[in-house]
Length: 155
Image (cartoon, rainbow, N blue to C red):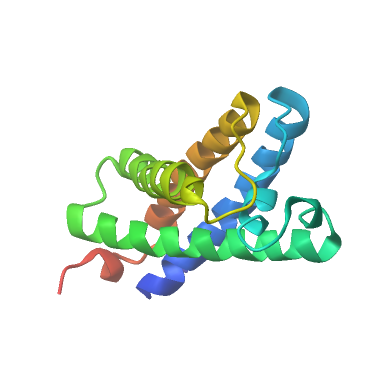
């Protein structure tokens, strides 16, 4: 079954990739880089004080925000692939995911004071970057894999 709707395709692919991203974030956080914060805490930190991001409701809020951000990136990525073509899908996934999320939102906008958690430690930043790489590659792959030819045909 191929997905024919642009928004549905981007959202579903991004939800699947964000799930893998969260697993990668957990592995990276606890076993590889051992950063100070997890991705969901950074997402929840836009709305909550840092100490509330580990509360069960704070975790839930962070995960929900994380998945909605992922869906928006997935939809944007579908349009990028639709406009520019499916060749080099992996590069486009990396550029969109890391350009928008890691550089623009995480690195620039949120550092201006839009959140209460600003991790300036090396390990947390490497964890976030690594999980964003996984997200970008997997989202673009799933869009190509699950997308109907109709989605990529210009109208």
